[in-house]
Length: 503
Image (cartoon, rainbow, N blue to C red; front, side, top):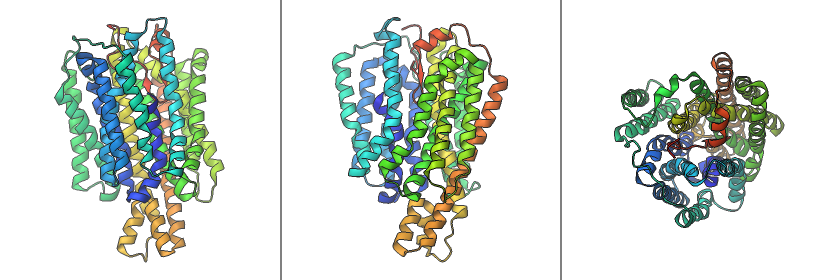
């Protein structure tokens, strides 16, 4: 769980360096992040069921081996396409590790020990998120960008050895069968939708490929929902969304993933390329957001006990909106001080909303549906993360290209400058064009501001909607379910898919 946690944040500080070293465009960087997240979200649907039917220990080890293979591949390659392929392999492995590492807990520990085991898993993930930027920055200070993949290898190897020697095998032969068609619709539909969103700024929203990608994605996801509604025991139980408490808490949790991953995607390039900090300095400068998130997440349960979940979640989303809108006032002349303030504010808003919303979503469900509810919640969160990178990265790219001044540059140089901030700095360095550097920095800050304004508007709208529609009372028995299926800032529900009453 630790390696999955810091792997969600370690790569972001490496993206600006990778863009410079392997010529990755903004679209390439979006796919480097989203190739992992899209596959992770789609493969998580069948992962728990496969483990239930064929053995959780066996499939967990297989997922770790696949993740290890992707990490090795990522450390060896040298082109954007190959990195995207490596991240895809890692996403497939991680999708099996996450739910199965969690679903073995109820089978290993009784009611007295289970909260302690969950707390250890929670600590590993909560510790991993802020650790990612620091580890990534420290590695990049001394080694090449592939080291952010290489660092996974010893930890994953240790996890495999521990599973082989210490973990007993458990299974549930009565688990529902895996639907190949539903898995295909989820993976292909989400991938096509993300493709359309990422490609739109460069090709235009009316481009046939963009339109085809968006239409195909929407169609396949609609087919997925309709087909799963007709199955007696579906992989993706959409009927859970009829529960008002589950629905609106899931909306809040999904938005948190949207904002968190999108923000951590757009900010590092500004800190590293525009402000000139090295990778370690960039990682350290992201800590106010992670610190605000972690502290607020720890305070959230006591605040919920006093004020109720609706008040705390809505307030958290409004604090998040304030952080986004404050961040949207950043100018190219500003230093790090303003960034630290709004990162802390945004992190506090994320922390206040994520834990109550995750606990509230599970608490709104009958105990016998906690496993399927956790699986749906995890899938929605990962989908929110993938769409967040796609939308906010595309908003940034469109605004950046619209403001960048490339008049007088040769066509090839102008194209390279428009593709990414790192590309513009490289062109300016080769030609000695200081005006291009200034224009690129100002254009990137403008794009970042627009993306942060989108985050602020989305959080504000969600906060107002939840203040109106989220049930105010905490469901009976939610405290017990929260203890057994605890949540954390980065991982979501600590009851993997199928971790329900039959265990």
